[in-house]
Length: 380
Image 1 (cartoon, rainbow, N blue to C red):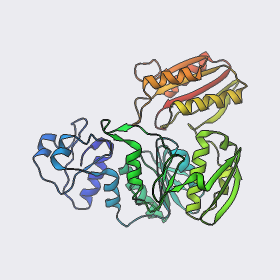
Image 2: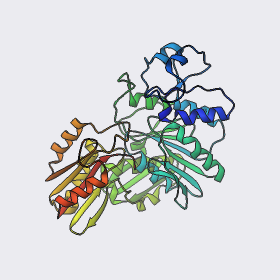
Image 3: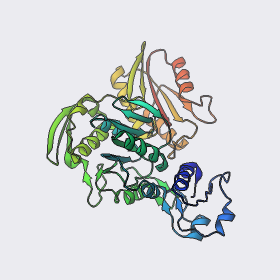
Image 4: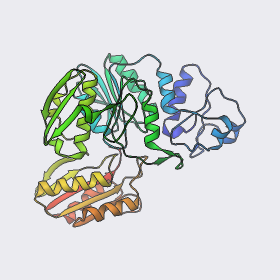
């Protein structure tokens, strides 16, 4: 079991619980499991590694190609699965899409996202963990225990065990020491799913193109597919950060035979363009795991529209490198140049503001009136 810090340790525990002998190797830090040198001279029936591990790593060269953590989770889960079971992956829009779908599913269920894992319909927070493939296992077991559905957000792919897999973004970036592309790996894993819902710009054999089922005209969303048709109206449809998740949620609902009309009542999530006023200052909160240049420019446009083009302070950066796809200094510089704010507060290691809260406090000091946009990449 390669890579103990991205869910490998949890997978190893699940495999041991099923009666297997497992060696763990901490390929990034060398602090857990057995040393690489020891694993090189042993023989294994199966090796599993995350999709982002360098394919030329010594252990992969010695033992051959590995099963991904996603595929290993599917194998561990076996046939004990909740229904419906929806898996969601993509560079951005995962959490919003997941929350939107959870509002449509009747009865008890589990929503597993980067914001936390919740039991529905109470929306009770059960725990907060990562969205590595291994974190899916307890969410599946809890959904199975309560006899409910599961909507699960996953990083860098899907297990293919669900009824439907959703890709939220066509955005691509290098992984595995630059030797693989994220979108190719996600599509490879999506191909294992019984049904796949795809965003604009992505083609996959057998996949359902969301924009072939759903269309927008201003605030109005129309949908027609799998015998389900109708429309709803939601002002969030005017925002790119919500229009695509609403499209994907509506298309997925149609695939499942569910009417997505209740999405007309779906509200903005904290950290996903949520707007609030503090006295004379408008705060647009767009600090989440998918924050990037495009979403920040969109948040600034939204803030200026709501505030009457008032002076804008941008709080930008990444909080303690909390996510796999970072917000690198060059991208931050390009984003600041594109937004052209009246003031900037940088957040991250090496800056006076190390956290979102510290960045917001600093922004309040220099923004007596106007707007503040939170654009810090982090898990929330």
